[in-house]
Image (cartoon, rainbow, N blue to C red; front, top):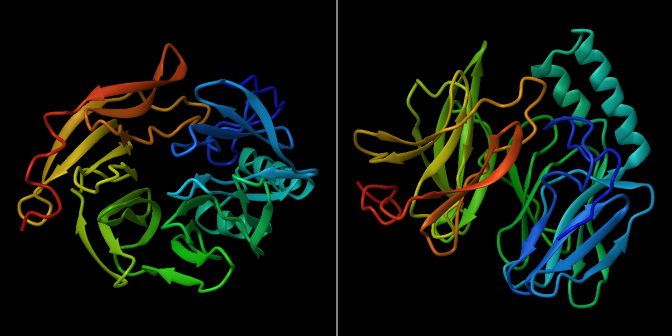
Length: 327
């Protein structure tokens, strides 16, 4: 679908540095128009799923994409975040040098580093190709989703982890689920039943994790703790209906799991054991999500040294009655 040739297309610092091709993690599928948008060099490009015809959508001189992208549910808008290329390259080089010299305190310096990378939130009208800035930030942001056709959901605010929302005209900024004793939000997915997310609280080398659901209409949320055995990185899986609750965990072990009876006696089911990330860098997230037919869980996994797209048959799990709604 692509013939990407960008010389340095990694998503440092989030994944492996120094990759070639198209910008990692930053492509999105528009299921309404059956097109995929992706970044190559200083261009946003598009390929049609049925025709495989490629075209340029927008030229962004001296800019570089820095965040997960998304289409509005009606397929009209493509949302993305970009930064000044020279600034990002300078700050990435400084980050890498300090990390290699063991002079980088991740808990503190990572936030300082993020605050030194101004960025722009923008949208493109997929019908006309018109480009519009939503808001400029004086810090880095690296997840963008659509809450609905008029509102964006983003990570992170300045100086901390978390999620916030804003309208496409740049108004109505709202911080959602601020830090509390359960920790801060790392990552979330938008479903028909609300925003599902995980919070993380770091303590020394370990972490404690909670799974939560945020109601964006009432601005209320509820959370359940994940077992203490899950003491490292967790990423919430995506079921568009919000019924089936699964996630990736990577610590001393690496696996896909589902959570059952969260408000009773919680039960974890191990769906698949995954190889550890490559020792020289993360390179990928498993980023598990449920296919539209609700039969297959799609994820990435290292096979023969390369990250591959894989499918896991979960049709016996998706409609069980013992997920979030069970009390």
